[in-house]
Image (cartoon, rainbow over all chains, first blue to last red; front, side, top):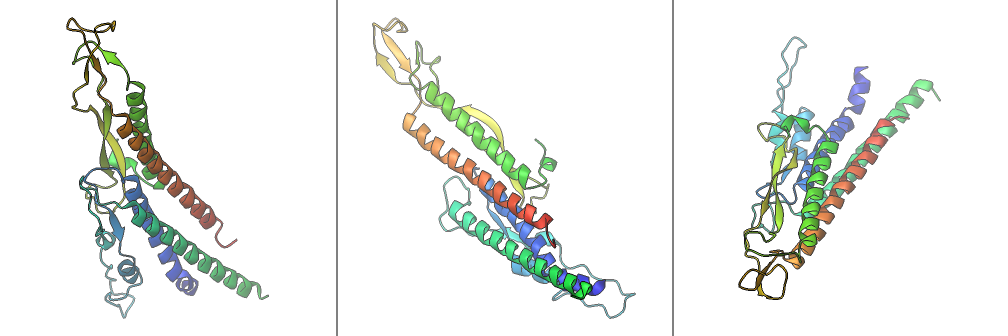
Length: 128
Length: 140
């Protein structure tokens, strides 16, 4: 059971992060006309590394306490914008739309990887 | 509107859409009254504008998830045009009428922007709904 979990772990973590990022980008797009709104984004690489336990304290015995990797909220930062606007809003619609479409595409890629892995497991179980 | 009401993409984009829709409604009111006439400066129609404010999903504003709320609708501080038309039924004793303080061009630009942003929100929802449907059927 654990090996199946490990087999699927990478892309399921990626999928969860992509989904979280989609919500943040959607928030930016929804706030495109709100004065003083500061656009945010998720640092995908950093959070992915934290989720996969890279750079985290490793345990060598099952009785050891595991140290939770840094709080997830720390992986979110403000977007550096190219052309500031006078009302203090830092949302640039074209930037957000590009990031959003890229993120959706990568979400679909992770989903496809997961599907293929599940299909592979199924055929191994059935022995076909 | 409470911050705990924002849970998912449908809340984010839904709020965003209702804010833009309200903005479109104010534009419609302004354009409808653009040529209205009053007999005193105080009575003259002044363009109304919604005031948007960010509605964060969490107290600490850390999750990056936020939607929009319309906190107020204000009349713009603009002087109505004073026109000398003694024959007009609404003219005051000096023969002046007061035109609504609405800039039609400005309203048209506002309308285009609001409808574009409304469309953006719709697009986000339909894209993410497609992703969700595909995720539900994962492994089939």
